[in-house]
Image (cartoon, rainbow, N blue to C red; front, side, top):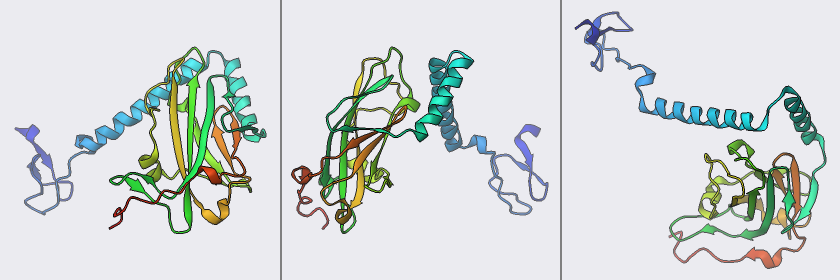
Length: 236
């Protein structure tokens, strides 16, 4: 019987463990956080990320010399000037091969039921890219690249995630490893001032992988502009 009773944290009165509040002082009988379903969900996600990171670390490091070399390479990555490529030109790293297939613009993305539009005076810059694991080992989530839009002054634009979710037809998986020989497609969307973007001259795509790689956007992208209007009645 004693196992079914707990002490009130406010007045120390002995109450039933299932009671919602103390009958003496009225204080809530809070259950330990580990009994909450959402606490277990967060814990599982954290464990998955830690395991994925440790497995990838085991795959990519073997000796202290290799670790030291990679640390040095990582430091140099932040200071080295990225090589500039063109749209459609393969970019080969030690483990991955990238191709920026298309950069365009859009007044809206999505369809009638699931869509997103930029703010007044802005446009979406859309990116379609593919990459392939050319190594002999699976690559985890921490090896997968990220992308930024770079303006002529070097300012980084991050992903508009709401627009990306409605635009992207991606087969890249967040928690799954990319196995050797597998090629996946990915995409990104950025919200940009239409006046600043102009015709795209001087803008670039930055691929963040083992180091930075820049892809020059063609100077005149007017033919790439998606001038479709949102479907009739979409905002009614």
